Image (cartoon, rainbow, N blue to C red; front, top):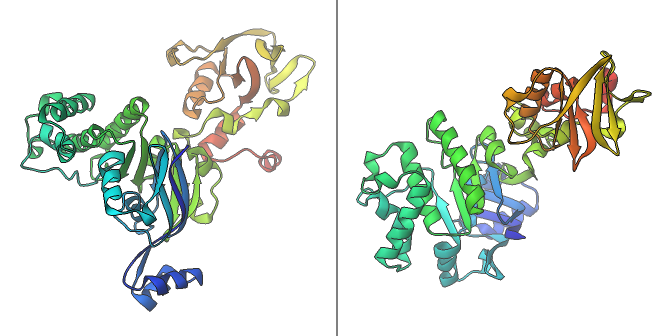
Length: 399
């Protein structure tokens, strides 16, 4: 179910909106419109649905419109044209036609924001900073402090509640900002490059913590970032913007494997595809695997074959050598994988893990779903994973 539903949204900054919207319809560029009217087009023709429990990362270079779109979701940037609906209970509220009391209700009960610059009040303790939003809701002091302490415990700052912001490191201050947003118990979190000002190690740690917190909290998060590796790591969906327009929206692996424009292709060219790709995206499907009298061919060069029992991988041989068929599970350690163990993994196995299995076993990785073979990952598939490319028949012919 869509919690945020955006359709044909325009956001214009300036005093000549009627003229500017007309020029948008005529196909003029942002620069041409700026030259003619002095208005800045922040968002143009955006359509986007964000589902419940999803982390949608808005990506793009500086000035692409990602923050302008994010700030429209809580009314900080007024809608010039189109609709922007936010779920409130069993109804959808359109911020394009929203009165003041309704907007204040959404901001205080439905939508919270985490800022890049922390936005902590230096005269308040850590605990009171986290509880501040509840104070604005007239929640009793005892209750708001109880809820604030609960969230400080969640982000690992329980022992710092009496400190002031200047006594905390940058990463700790950002955790306070996260705790404050979570304390409001809003279903929608807007995060505007919250980790960009932090050192790389602290940034990576907070990304991991956000993923862990999201697994427990199940919030709907719109997250602005200019770092594609960050987007691929935390996002369930990624929206890439250029010149105020959305040019591609999809799952992280779809963005990496199927960039829709040269701009997106350049954008993803230098990322590490192993951080996002899954076995299913790059496997050789079972119906494309070679078959001979000894079974399915895993490697013709060293005569590695696999036999199935009602679709289940059961027996494997390399020449005259019998191979141990072993199921890979999340509870296993990579150190348990030995040479000549044919590993059977779920199709959603990460390519990074699959490459480790290949390295340690010296064999292709077999993929099975609900016990039935669906495909395999050969060296050819691993090379395509490293390059971030789909395997196609054209590439097979070229090889």
